[in-house]
Amino acid sequence: MDIEKKYPVPPFTEETAREKVQLAEDAWNSQNPEKVSKAYTVDTEWRNRSQFVNGREEVVSFLTEKWKKEKNYKLRKELWAFTDNKIAVRFEYEYQNAEGAWIRAYGNENWEFNEHGLMQKRFASINDLPIAASERRL
Image (cartoon, one colour):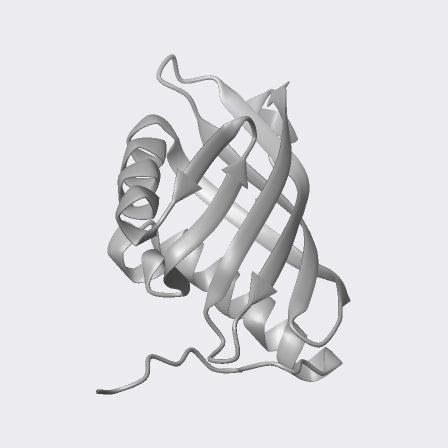
């Protein structure tokens, strides 16, 4: 049986933590739920705002619905802190809602990884701010 790995793996250094954050940003900007889900354990646990998501199948379903509603999605993540197997990031993303209004969402995420580099826990605190198209940064 092949063991699933997602490099870089813990323990993280500043360099590998930054790499992990960039890989996550790139994957989410692909807006491909299947691709994104492969970075998580099969039994991953998420809190996203007030919603709880458990397991890869729910991740795929959650992201599929998310990107149906959030058009012209663009995300930027920034390393905030790290330890052996944990990374904290600050992020912002912009999208258009169903009515065409622009929204900037921003917040913090705390990530915990298993020894194979797969994210087993993701806790996201997110705030939304309506913006004018002229205020877009991404």
